[in-house]
Each structure stands twice: as structure tokens, then as C-alpha cells.
Figure 1 (tube, rainbow, N blue to C red):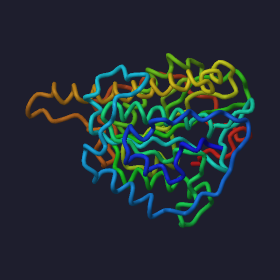
Figure 2: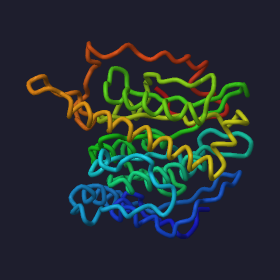
Figure 3: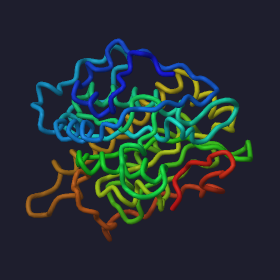
Figure 4: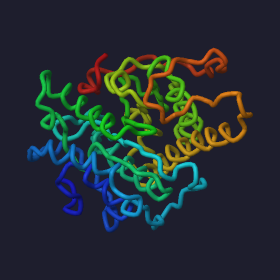
Length: 323
């Protein structure tokens, strides 16, 4: 069960409070069991909160200086940008499991810490969840509970129109030798791929392994979010080195900071590119554009990463996205 400090309303309402909302919150403890619960239906509240996020004055959304772990990068490239942080799974959907740990419990504190860092840099952030809950009940549409859960996450991104949506997951495999992080992006999407490369530059220093890769992915969130979007598998619960990072508070904070640094690196690159573009020579592809851009012909060849042996182990990760 999550601490009482976490509000029970859909977490987009937390976004209205900026960085101050997390003040006094404690990191949830890991429990090797799946906690479930029945959350009230408040679709209207969630959508209204999402709409108010962008309508609220900047002063109401201003971030307070972080109490710990100051972001290393200058805040300027992040100020005023909008992000959606999506900790995967939740509630009845535990995601991957290994060694008594559940994916939903691992990614939530990482997502909360990443949100804190982004807000401290002046960004506005919407969370798809800030507690142990699945989101399928918020979507009355057709399809399975799992598909409706994914559709709700997509609806949050479409409502907020972010500069980036980052979906957080962890992996598991029948082979204990598989380790490392993987960043998936929508095939042919320039900005998403560039962000994925920057994220991997940071993550592979913290979670090195034979599966480190930046790959196009045919996954629901990647297909249906028309904004820059990346789905990150942070590591393998089934590898002892990855698991030590994924499940420790220090490791989770380090992962969140690596994600933040990768995002900041990308937007700093973008800001420099805009400044250095000669008049009349056009502008680089904007990561915040709602259109779905194809790979530009002048773009550099893909960076070489080894391809993972398999995307997901169906026995250990029964609720992961299906193409």
C-alpha cells in the first residue's frame, strides 16, 4: 500500500501543484507482493486537471528549488517545457517480476524523482500515475482492461501536447545473462530517436550491458502518441547487477538523474542548433512539434547498438504491451 502522503486522485491533479506537491512525500517501500485496490472513477476530474495544467498561469506552476540532488544541467533549456512522465503498469498489473520485485513498484519512485527534477528545472510535468493503480477504469471505451489502460496514458499525452512523453519500464528474461537498458522510439520519428540516443548515452554508463540498444518499436504508446515519445526499459530485474541499481533508493535516484540529464542534453542541443542556424537556412526539426516527422535525409546514420535477443519474456512480463 502506498503511503498516505500520496493523494488518491488521478495524478494529473498533482501536476497543478508544481514541485511543491512532492514536498514532504516519502519514497514508497518495495514489497514483494502485488498491492491492489479499487480507485474511484473520476475521468472528468482527470481530463479537467489536464486541461488546467496548460491554462494555469506560469506563477502557479513555478518550480521550487529541489531539496536534494540538484540537476546538473542549466535549467534554461527546460524552462516552460511540458513533459508527460508515464510510470508503466500499476494496480492489478504488476508488469515484469523477478526476485520478489514487481516492475510497477520499481518504476514509480523513478518516475516521481524524474518529475521532481524536471519541475526543479522550470518544466511543467503531468504524471499518468503517482500511486499504485492501473488506469483502465478511467477509459469507458472498448477493449481489454490492459488496452484501455494504455489508451488512457495516450489520452493524457494528447491532452497536454508535451515536448516529450517518456514511458518507464523494466525488463526480465529467462536468461540471467541479459542486462542493460533499451530505449524504443516510433519508427521514422526524428525527434523521438534523437532523444532516445541522448538517453542511452547516459543510461549505458549507469546500466551497462549486452542489451543496451536504441531501437524502433511497434508498441501501443509509441504508435498512438503524436508527439515526441520514448519508451525506456531501464534494465533487467533478472540480472543481479541491474537489479541492484533498479531496486535501491540510490540506484533509482541515479536512474532518474540519468534520464533527466539525457532529456536536458537533447533540449540543450536543440537550443544550440536554433541559435547556430543561419538566417534563411531553415530550422531543425522541433521536438515539440505535434506533427509526426519522418527521418530527414541529411540525418546521420543510426548509431550502432547490438540488437536485444528478445523484446519481452512472456512468462516473466505477462502484461507488457503487445504490438
